[in-house]
Image (spheres, rainbow, N blue to C red):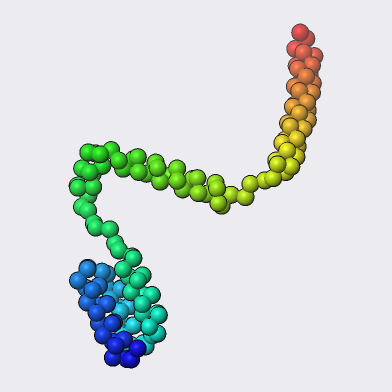
Amino acid sequence: MTDRERLNVANKMSEKKKSSGQSETEESKAQVSEKEPKSARASAREERQSKSVSKPARRDAKSAQVSTKKSGGFRNRAFVRFVRESYRELRYKVTWPTFVEARNMTIVVILLSTIIGLILGLVDQGLLQAFKAITGK
């Protein structure tokens, strides 16, 4: 691809961005790309990315409130999104223990709970005996 063809592609891309209402930062990126020569693959990749990234249409606050009241779907969508994200996190991000590790940790918890329970029971009995001795009952 020659420099002239690259310039034409860059100009077309900047015109598309202007007509579709893209932000000024993206226009400045197009201007930078006009200055720097790029390979055909890089320019094609940028064009695909610019097409795939589209901003959702803005709604004013009143229409957003009205639409959520009518359908009641905002809470449902938020809840569904929360459930999906929770599932993905539990499925792919959490490191789960193996069965042997889980069994060993469970045994340790049961033993420690029993030991602490016995210690607290002995302290309680000792304090009860001390209270009886002090009060004379």
